[in-house]
Image (cartoon, rainbow, N blue to C red; front, side):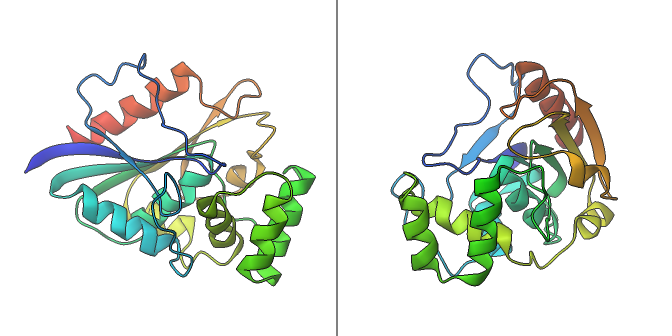
Length: 217
Protein backbone atom coordinates (compact mmCIF):
# COMPACT_ATOMS: atom_id res chain seq x y z
CA UNK A 1 0.00 0.00 0.00
CA UNK A 2 1.36 3.44 -0.95
CA UNK A 3 2.12 5.70 2.01
CA UNK A 4 0.51 8.92 0.88
CA UNK A 5 -0.72 11.04 -2.00
CA UNK A 6 -2.34 14.34 -2.90
CA UNK A 7 -5.58 13.85 -4.81
CA UNK A 8 -6.10 16.93 -6.98
CA UNK A 9 -9.52 18.16 -8.14
CA UNK A 10 -9.21 20.45 -11.15
CA UNK A 11 -11.14 23.66 -11.71
CA UNK A 12 -14.29 24.21 -13.76
CA UNK A 13 -13.86 25.46 -17.30
CA UNK A 14 -14.53 24.47 -20.88
CA UNK A 15 -11.48 22.20 -20.50
CA UNK A 16 -9.97 20.93 -17.25
CA UNK A 17 -6.77 22.44 -15.90
CA UNK A 18 -3.93 20.11 -15.02
CA UNK A 19 -2.97 21.54 -11.65
CA UNK A 20 0.61 22.36 -10.61
CA UNK A 21 2.86 22.87 -13.62
CA UNK A 22 5.87 20.66 -14.23
CA UNK A 23 8.24 23.34 -12.90
CA UNK A 24 6.66 23.11 -9.43
CA UNK A 25 8.83 21.08 -7.03
CA UNK A 26 6.66 18.20 -5.87
CA UNK A 27 9.56 16.88 -3.75
CA UNK A 28 8.45 13.28 -3.96
CA UNK A 29 4.71 13.92 -3.56
CA UNK A 30 2.54 11.40 -5.36
CA UNK A 31 0.13 13.77 -7.13
CA UNK A 32 -3.01 12.10 -8.48
CA UNK A 33 -4.82 14.33 -10.98
CA UNK A 34 -8.46 13.28 -10.95
CA UNK A 35 -10.58 13.87 -14.07
CA UNK A 36 -14.23 14.54 -13.24
CA UNK A 37 -17.14 13.07 -15.18
CA UNK A 38 -17.91 15.14 -18.25
CA UNK A 39 -14.31 16.28 -18.82
CA UNK A 40 -11.78 14.87 -21.31
CA UNK A 41 -14.46 12.71 -22.97
CA UNK A 42 -15.32 10.94 -19.71
CA UNK A 43 -19.06 10.20 -19.41
CA UNK A 44 -20.99 12.86 -17.48
CA UNK A 45 -22.86 11.97 -14.28
CA UNK A 46 -25.54 14.66 -14.06
CA UNK A 47 -27.41 12.94 -11.21
CA UNK A 48 -24.30 12.64 -9.01
CA UNK A 49 -23.80 15.20 -6.23
CA UNK A 50 -20.54 16.61 -4.88
CA UNK A 51 -20.08 13.76 -2.42
CA UNK A 52 -20.82 11.09 -5.04
CA UNK A 53 -18.10 12.43 -7.33
CA UNK A 54 -15.61 12.84 -4.49
CA UNK A 55 -16.27 9.34 -3.17
CA UNK A 56 -15.60 7.84 -6.60
CA UNK A 57 -12.34 9.79 -6.88
CA UNK A 58 -11.14 8.63 -3.48
CA UNK A 59 -12.05 5.06 -4.34
CA UNK A 60 -9.96 5.28 -7.52
CA UNK A 61 -7.02 6.70 -5.54
CA UNK A 62 -6.90 3.91 -2.98
CA UNK A 63 -5.18 1.84 -1.76
CA UNK A 64 -3.28 4.78 -0.31
CA UNK A 65 -2.76 5.02 3.42
CA UNK A 66 -2.90 8.83 3.63
CA UNK A 67 -4.55 11.28 1.23
CA UNK A 68 -4.79 15.05 1.22
CA UNK A 69 -7.58 16.32 -1.01
CA UNK A 70 -6.61 19.45 -2.94
CA UNK A 71 -8.97 21.52 -5.07
CA UNK A 72 -8.57 24.69 -7.10
CA UNK A 73 -11.50 26.97 -7.95
CA UNK A 74 -14.49 24.78 -8.91
CA UNK A 75 -12.57 21.73 -7.71
CA UNK A 76 -12.55 23.01 -4.13
CA UNK A 77 -16.14 21.95 -3.32
CA UNK A 78 -15.28 18.40 -4.41
CA UNK A 79 -12.23 18.33 -2.13
CA UNK A 80 -14.41 19.53 0.74
CA UNK A 81 -17.06 16.95 -0.12
CA UNK A 82 -14.43 14.24 0.10
CA UNK A 83 -13.39 15.54 3.49
CA UNK A 84 -16.99 15.27 4.72
CA UNK A 85 -17.20 11.53 4.04
CA UNK A 86 -15.15 10.33 6.99
CA UNK A 87 -12.90 8.13 4.82
CA UNK A 88 -10.02 6.89 7.00
CA UNK A 89 -7.37 7.69 4.39
CA UNK A 90 -8.25 11.39 4.16
CA UNK A 91 -5.94 13.46 6.36
CA UNK A 92 -6.68 17.00 5.20
CA UNK A 93 -8.22 19.33 2.63
CA UNK A 94 -6.30 22.05 0.80
CA UNK A 95 -8.17 24.74 -1.13
CA UNK A 96 -6.74 27.20 -3.65
CA UNK A 97 -8.95 30.03 -4.93
CA UNK A 98 -11.88 27.79 -4.11
CA UNK A 99 -15.59 28.33 -4.27
CA UNK A 100 -17.28 28.65 -0.90
CA UNK A 101 -20.94 27.90 -0.16
CA UNK A 102 -22.85 30.98 -1.35
CA UNK A 103 -26.57 31.44 -0.84
CA UNK A 104 -27.24 33.90 -2.37
CA UNK A 105 -24.29 34.19 -4.78
CA UNK A 106 -21.72 36.62 -3.43
CA UNK A 107 -21.80 40.09 -4.99
CA UNK A 108 -18.08 39.86 -5.66
CA UNK A 109 -18.65 37.19 -8.31
CA UNK A 110 -18.77 38.29 -11.95
CA UNK A 111 -22.36 39.21 -12.82
CA UNK A 112 -22.61 36.47 -15.44
CA UNK A 113 -21.55 33.84 -12.92
CA UNK A 114 -24.15 35.07 -10.44
CA UNK A 115 -26.83 34.73 -13.11
CA UNK A 116 -25.78 31.20 -14.03
CA UNK A 117 -25.84 30.11 -10.38
CA UNK A 118 -29.35 31.47 -9.96
CA UNK A 119 -30.41 29.80 -13.19
CA UNK A 120 -28.91 26.47 -12.06
CA UNK A 121 -31.08 26.53 -8.94
CA UNK A 122 -34.29 27.09 -10.86
CA UNK A 123 -33.97 25.63 -14.35
CA UNK A 124 -33.52 22.05 -15.59
CA UNK A 125 -30.11 20.97 -16.83
CA UNK A 126 -30.94 21.33 -20.60
CA UNK A 127 -31.81 25.00 -20.07
CA UNK A 128 -28.59 25.67 -18.17
CA UNK A 129 -26.57 23.78 -20.77
CA UNK A 130 -28.10 25.80 -23.63
CA UNK A 131 -27.45 29.06 -21.78
CA UNK A 132 -23.80 28.19 -21.19
CA UNK A 133 -23.38 27.05 -24.79
CA UNK A 134 -24.64 30.46 -25.92
CA UNK A 135 -21.53 32.01 -24.36
CA UNK A 136 -19.19 29.32 -25.68
CA UNK A 137 -19.12 26.98 -22.65
CA UNK A 138 -20.13 23.59 -23.99
CA UNK A 139 -18.37 21.13 -21.70
CA UNK A 140 -20.95 18.90 -19.93
CA UNK A 141 -18.69 18.66 -16.89
CA UNK A 142 -18.81 22.43 -16.50
CA UNK A 143 -22.61 22.38 -16.61
CA UNK A 144 -22.75 19.79 -13.85
CA UNK A 145 -20.15 21.63 -11.75
CA UNK A 146 -22.34 24.73 -11.72
CA UNK A 147 -25.48 22.78 -10.84
CA UNK A 148 -23.75 20.97 -7.98
CA UNK A 149 -22.21 24.12 -6.51
CA UNK A 150 -25.45 26.09 -6.89
CA UNK A 151 -27.55 23.61 -4.94
CA UNK A 152 -27.25 22.72 -1.22
CA UNK A 153 -24.02 20.84 -0.70
CA UNK A 154 -25.29 18.38 1.90
CA UNK A 155 -22.54 19.26 4.40
CA UNK A 156 -20.93 22.35 5.90
CA UNK A 157 -17.33 23.51 5.88
CA UNK A 158 -17.48 23.39 9.67
CA UNK A 159 -18.42 19.69 9.45
CA UNK A 160 -15.30 19.02 7.40
CA UNK A 161 -13.07 21.08 9.67
CA UNK A 162 -14.26 19.03 12.64
CA UNK A 163 -13.00 15.87 10.90
CA UNK A 164 -9.70 16.91 9.28
CA UNK A 165 -7.53 20.02 8.95
CA UNK A 166 -8.75 22.38 6.23
CA UNK A 167 -6.52 25.14 4.83
CA UNK A 168 -7.28 27.68 2.11
CA UNK A 169 -4.98 29.89 0.05
CA UNK A 170 -6.82 32.76 -1.62
CA UNK A 171 -5.80 36.00 -3.34
CA UNK A 172 -7.15 39.03 -1.54
CA UNK A 173 -8.42 40.61 -4.78
CA UNK A 174 -9.33 37.45 -6.68
CA UNK A 175 -11.53 38.79 -9.52
CA UNK A 176 -13.26 35.49 -10.28
CA UNK A 177 -13.94 33.89 -6.89
CA UNK A 178 -14.12 36.37 -4.00
CA UNK A 179 -12.30 35.73 -0.75
CA UNK A 180 -15.11 37.34 1.27
CA UNK A 181 -17.15 34.21 2.06
CA UNK A 182 -14.06 32.45 3.44
CA UNK A 183 -13.35 35.33 5.82
CA UNK A 184 -16.63 34.56 7.55
CA UNK A 185 -16.30 30.77 7.55
CA UNK A 186 -15.14 28.86 10.61
CA UNK A 187 -13.33 25.54 10.53
CA UNK A 188 -10.57 26.56 8.10
CA UNK A 189 -7.07 28.01 8.26
CA UNK A 190 -7.27 30.88 5.73
CA UNK A 191 -4.04 32.12 4.14
CA UNK A 192 -4.44 35.53 2.52
CA UNK A 193 -2.36 35.89 -0.63
CA UNK A 194 -1.51 39.37 -1.96
CA UNK A 195 -2.59 40.38 -5.44
CA UNK A 196 -5.45 39.59 -7.78
CA UNK A 197 -4.52 36.16 -9.10
CA UNK A 198 -7.17 33.51 -9.51
CA UNK A 199 -4.70 31.02 -10.94
CA UNK A 200 -2.38 30.00 -8.08
CA UNK A 201 1.13 31.41 -8.30
CA UNK A 202 4.13 29.14 -7.95
CA UNK A 203 4.59 30.27 -4.36
CA UNK A 204 0.98 29.41 -3.55
CA UNK A 205 1.31 25.93 -5.05
CA UNK A 206 4.48 25.36 -3.04
CA UNK A 207 2.88 26.52 0.20
CA UNK A 208 -0.16 24.28 -0.27
CA UNK A 209 1.92 21.28 -1.29
CA UNK A 210 4.26 21.74 1.69
CA UNK A 211 1.23 21.82 3.99
CA UNK A 212 -0.10 18.66 2.40
CA UNK A 213 3.28 16.93 2.59
CA UNK A 214 3.40 17.38 6.35
CA UNK A 215 0.11 15.49 6.69
CA UNK A 216 0.95 12.48 4.51
CA UNK A 217 4.59 11.80 5.36
